[in-house]
Amino acid sequence: MEIIDNKALLLKVRDPGRITTVIPKSKILDTGEVLVKWGLEEAQVLKNLKIKNVPSPITAHYNWPGLYKPFDHQRTTAEFLTLHRRAFCFNEQGTGKTGSVIWAADYLLKLGIIKRVLVLCPLSIMQSAWQNDLFRFAMHRTCTIAHSYSREKRIDAVNADSEFVICNFDGLGIIKDAVIAGDFDLIVVDEANAYKTVSTARWKLLHSVIKPTTWLWMLTGTPASQSPTDAYGLAKLVNPQSVPRFYGSFRDQVMQKITQFKWVPKKSSEQTVFDVLQPAIRFTKEDCLDLPEMTYTTRDIPLTAQQTKYYEIIRKNMLAHAAGEEITTVNAAANLNKLLQLSCGAVYSDSGEVVEFDASNRINALKEVIDEASHKVLVFVPYTHAIHIITEELNKCGYDAEIINGAVSVSNRTDIFNRFQTSDKPKVLVIQPQAASHGVTLTAANVVVWFSPITSVETYLQANARVHRAGQHNPCTVVHLEGSPVEKRMYKMLQGKVDIHTKMIDLYKNILNETP
View 1 (cartoon, rainbow, N blue to C red):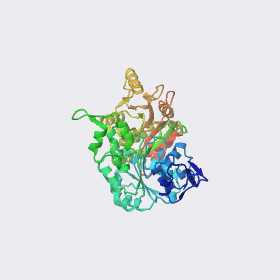
View 2: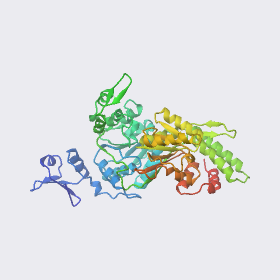
View 3: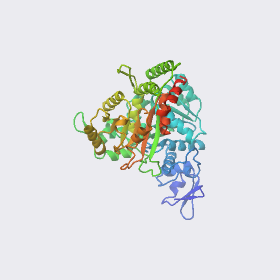
View 4: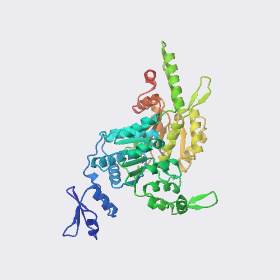
């Protein structure tokens, strides 16, 4: 296949007539070759005719706007998406999937093929990933977030005629009628494993808003990671012809019944899952040679209503105590620690008692990160009680997590580290930062999650270096979970390598002066 003047494709095929009969802007040359106009619609038709290596015109007719140049794998991913109305993107976490999707969607908008895009994603990445990346990669496009405590405001966000509307998974039910009436031509589902089960209300809701003409791109770095049967719900949305009508029939294809309660995957299940989850594109971090060695991302997680209430109570008490008094670094650190503890879900009272708060939003976001991770995960948590709450919740949900903190003996730590590096389990280590920030190699993981920030830049950098050291063969990702104003300020300081201890008074004053 040859591209002629960026306007036409020259093809050598056995049966030229099958192309000219379905593509009006094509002709057979005297040489027997076929000349086809190089437009997106023509490229899609050629793809449907099983012509190999058909390029999308996005490669030549798009200027890739934004603050950054696309990586090679992002160009290839965007090209793939423009050629498929329904498709999967299985690129690993940290490879820049959102950028690829935004550029591909922007190109379709530019051509007038689509008019509006609905993005469905976890609450924690609506702003930090999607809204922020839309500004970075397509700042000329309009965007609204359909999330508010008010039903009316959510609906108003959909009706505002923005080209991109971002909504969390469970918010779709509130805006369903507005979405159906809103002429959304493209629906993007990020972390699509949330729709793996067809019997859930969430799956049925999404299915009800997809029209036969709707473009649908589903994104996840870990398709069918728990069981081959997880592929059924995803395939039923993107490529329903590839799976049986009923779930039980698909289960029989990929699973073998051992006892009344136990099923195991068949040897052929991997190929079956691959076949039904098509069309798909996948880049691993190892494939992306132009990626930076360490990528930093943020998940913005709203405090729960209970946390929000008491956060403001603590801040106002700090303000009252500060009136007319000189605040020392020690006092500032102690008071700010209360806010950080609250954000984590467990506050230590002056008497040493622990008061637990609802931190479900943050724990759910942590699970999402772990689900998307292709390798093992380190979770750094500064506070002992929060460590136990998190680990208990993860194990209850089947994630197989173990604790590393000061209470774990040296011999037990060594055993846990060895098993983490050499065995399948544990998959997750929940770590007090000071207990594993120096001298330990944990390269079986390539994702580091900070459940809450710390004050020491040195400890922060050393903790991240547990995965980013000799023996690591995969690019690494550091994920910051943040929800309170104090956390956002501290993460910025840590990434800027600002010693928070020396700036504690300034940070304290900034928190006091915040507008609630």
